[in-house]
Length: 316
Image 1 (cartoon, rainbow, N blue to C red):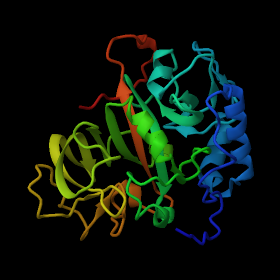
Image 2 (tube, rainbow, N blue to C red):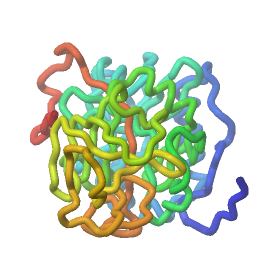
Image 3 (spheres, rainbow, N blue to C red):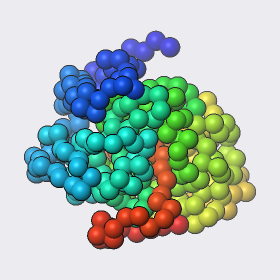
């Protein structure tokens, strides 16, 4: 498919950035490549939200897991998000957490086929570790609107960012192989996780990388749309000829979760965005962002309680 890409500041539509790191690449090499790609792709759009946080947060980051910051920080609900190096091999962000990592940030994973940098959230939900697989701004929705998550459509996959980023289907699939859950969030960079405009489900109940359907009821563990909350309920999902999403205005559904009160006609949530509601955080303004994650949780008490963040809620 040919695309004529307009000038979009920070983002070039990069389907393969400088070649993929090989499995044998060292952590330092992968980190160096990330930093180079971030520098050469331009930073004007991202800096509109990140510069002030970057200036406030730049600091050395030492941790018990021998991580070392590489001169780059962002905001994670008010917490620094450095790039970490490590002296062990991790398949997912959960492996990093189980090795003692306790801060969200950029880490190297080795998925069994190749090594690359991903963003890990290991702070916002107690005992959960999440790997970012996609993030995009509403103003760049046209690049992903018609691309279901089962479509191989990598965007800047070697340069994780919040405004136009998606891993290849192969990478997402290998990460999913070590994940029990997926979640979709809004405005993670600025809002972190407060479980508003948020959904989490088990891959076994609805797999965003294989599900093909239009409005089928799927079980979710937790869902919140504009303050309408459901726990262990069914909700209608679309993931066919377009990005995975919900339509919270849909009245023809037999699903148990309802969020049509306060919805706009044909309102889309967490993707596609043919119709948007400014009261839904992902579509509040042009720079609003949507994220998809794969994750799992520590099944035994391996973490010191001293690493727990005050104010974090475990929501089921």
